[in-house]
Length: 123
Image 1 (cartoon, one colour):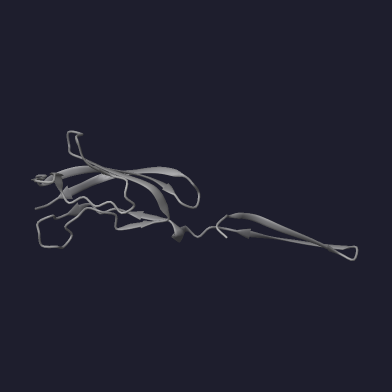
Image 2: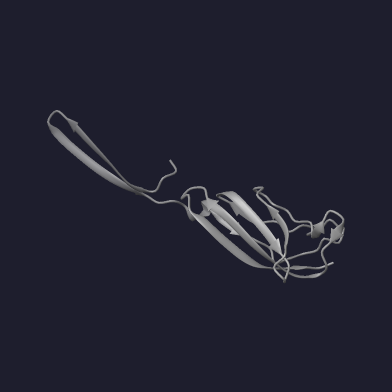
């Protein structure tokens, strides 16, 4: 079952009726989004891409990365989007502060939400 609410059952047998109900609540652990605030695409294979730390219970994802002037550097609709710190395939972005926007839909509630934040790119 993946729907929260009050569920009732009524049983009638041999002229007698019995009823009961139960309240089902959704576990908040089914949904989680956590994004990093720094990454280091310096070639050492540690923390080398910007991607969600936790992305659970979501669908229809869109991630955008912009520089401090608002220029779009990266966009992706992949469920697990990863930015390697490049403006183009041959042009690494300079060290500094960038801004991300993550649009997504919660899988269970069909609710669309937007998260945004800053990230620091360190070389």
